[in-house]
Length: 349
Image 1 (cartoon, rainbow, N blue to C red):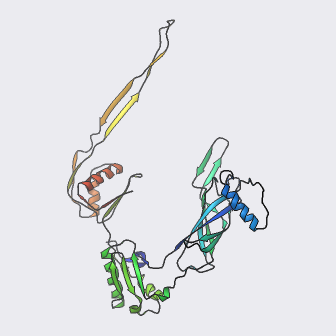
Image 2: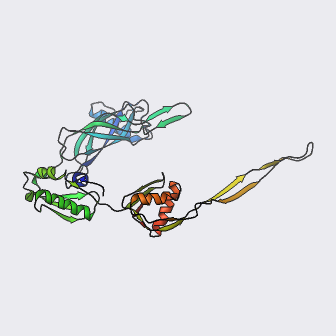
Image 3: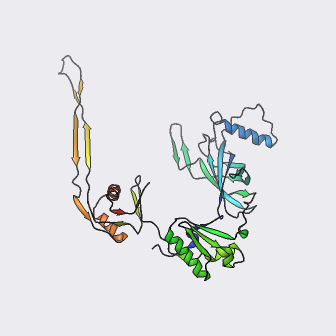
């Protein structure tokens, strides 16, 4: 068991969700780290459009500044965001600008998937990287071509969603599971003393707002979201081959199995020898190749028995008894899974 968890941490309420926004804008005020206009002609186009909207006639002029950059601006409009509210935005360069440090984003409309403008972003960019450059070398730390503007966008349009008009509301489990969904149904019905929730499938529990007798759906959600439920989940082993990380769930079980593991090491060394003619003799120096090739097999740990584990600590103790490195442990777990002795979902990332 994972212990009691609040319902709000296990489910998403149907309709109570954010919406992604995106916009195309211009960053100015860079210290010579902007786009090269020959490589990014769209930067010149948007700069001309902005200047013309401000009443500056730039027709036929040649722009070659290095302190501007074209960017994409992204944000998430939270559920029930109201006009006038502020949200955070992320700014990312799309041209060949080397850094957005110290730049200012010019007023940029942010559109949703329906093409409507829901927010407008503007402000000073906080970039998370640094660049040190000399005549012959440069050092880059982090990603200076991407940054954020806290509270950098103001909401101009609200999402049309009337929570108060709903008669029924669905609770969508983040990790679908029939046992967890059934427990959520039982906890809600026990709290109200009558049948107000019903499990539709492993990922959905439907709430009847009318039977809750609450003044509004918001009141009903406020009552049930802090109810405690003990969730269930599939037994799962997750491994990351790049970092050698292994994560196991508490329900992982291993049947009794014998394991043997060893490594082959192939070593090839080149040690050429230079052969020179005798003193005062005619001839030339010749390089004679010399190769030393060896194959070594590590002794390993022989054939070891992994006893059946009924708890996570017993499984870990049995695997640790093999005395191998984490990366070798990943290969062993793959083989145990292939042998049918690892009773868990095996996920490789």
